[in-house]
Image (tube, rainbow over all chains, first blue to last red; front, side, top):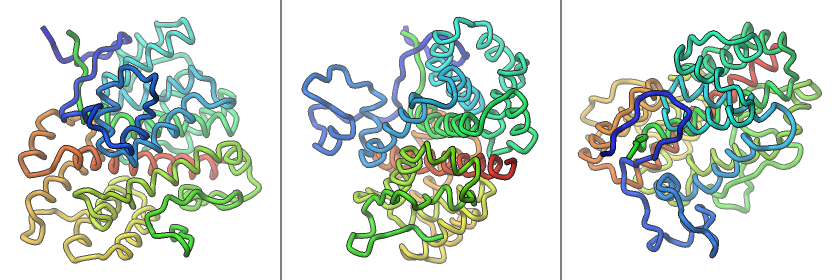
Length: 191
Length: 185
């Protein structure tokens, strides 16, 4: 039986949309282009098919997301994932948390960090380095954004450079975008 | 600050900034030249350019569907207000003026309550949803989508609205972060 997932975890559920996704064989050329469909494309996810309702946004958001999360240099991949998870905890995007907690675990082999975050939520107590990154991303993700000079100073204290802090701002912020799609247009389920 | 438009192009064309031009986000964040922050941003020009293109895709789309450019600008100004960013509000008020401001849309932009005879039920539902996605994202439920559909909002417009709200909230956070980083240099 299918059930909706409400708990934070690092095992990735299935995403079930609240609106009817675009049918692949009825997609317009513009929608197909935005979904980056090639002759070798196999399963296009329900999420991408849902976003194909607005191909102009999808076409620019996909490369923006990938460049922020997977671009070269600057903040480490694991720390970008930590920023992504912090935003997703604030916005309660269970699906986003699962995907990016799993990536963090894969990169760091330290699942206890995410276990602490799942248990403590935005109040989670972490080691200093992770704490500074997590707290900044949590505060930036609040509405309105609540990060201030103290959180920036904490990032400098743990030794982050200008571009590393810039990358953290970007990775937390792009999840302010992703969470508002994933958490509001569908729900995580287990079959 | 005005969005840059090349005179030879229609207003809706996505404009990528030139090499030495600052994007909207950098302008609104007050990024100063020859600072550690401007040096860091010089390594992230692709991201800033894609952010600018995203702005144009959600505020000035070629196919706006059931959300006109003026309605989008009014909603964006409202959401910028919830994000406590007067400079971003001013930018969207200017876009609203360019697209054709009405008294009802001006009220929407300034964050006023929407229970007005001047606002049809469908648009009132859209405003409520934009507020939810901006102020209480975590509380969004399946029932909120059901309510939009019941108010006559189409499924493609629900996705367009989510992208608009999501973008403005992304943009407001990048601007807030850059201001902090620039000030702390």
